[in-house]
Length: 96
Image (cartoon, rainbow, N blue to C red):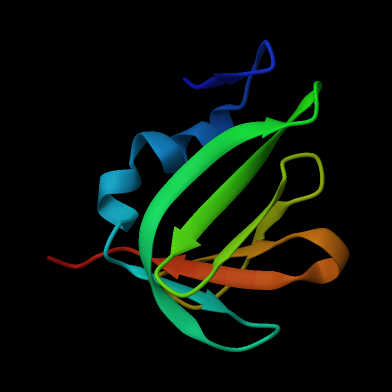
């Protein structure tokens, strides 16, 4: 489990710990449009008391503070996230 600022985040750590299955997959921004190939998944400090889940792509990245983000229902084969102000984006595994 990944520790950030002295706390562990089981829900969000799993995406970083399994990042190899996401790298090469698709990141799609449902609010602003566009898709890109995933290059990295990170859980990094956000200030001194929280963490930020960041999915990076070749063209852009999406993420949120873990206190403001969540997973919601979406299309089969995708994991859909909702972040700040309802910003919605999703990821799909790299099918090798």
